[in-house]
Image (cartoon, rainbow, N blue to C red; front, side):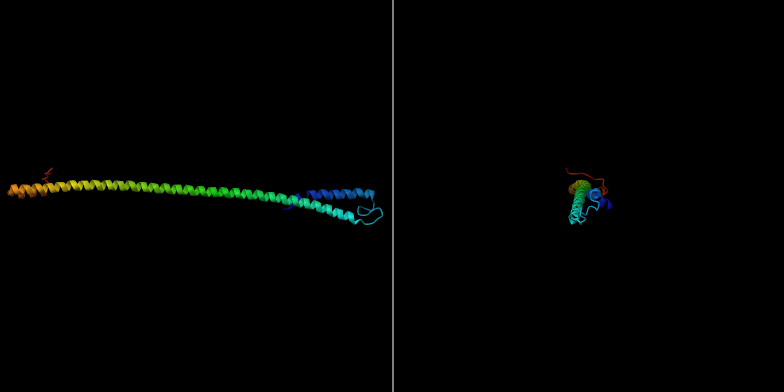
Length: 173
């Protein structure tokens, strides 16, 4: 704070130094001083002029201080905007990366589920085909037994026993 205060008053110092130098030099011409004329009358015009000159110097200094502070404020505002923009970009990038990773995990889990579903479907289809084949063999075996029983009634007992033991398999095809 003191730096700003003293930094801005350079012009005022110059005016004050100028007033002091003028008053010292005027003492040589006017032994009674700067504020008195040759007749010894007090000169209010000089004092007013000195106050006005000092006011001009102070206002110039104050304007310089204000301009410098305004420039600092503009720089700080621009830096803040830039930092805010960078922060928003970082947040957006993190969000995009997070969403991409979540989507990748979801797609991976969907792919695993599809693979599992395909394996189950293939196993079920194979099981259904096996059941069809076994059912066809079963029906054809029963048909063969029934045909044999009509032709040879004594063979019914032996055919039933061999069929139940799994020895007799004769498809009709």
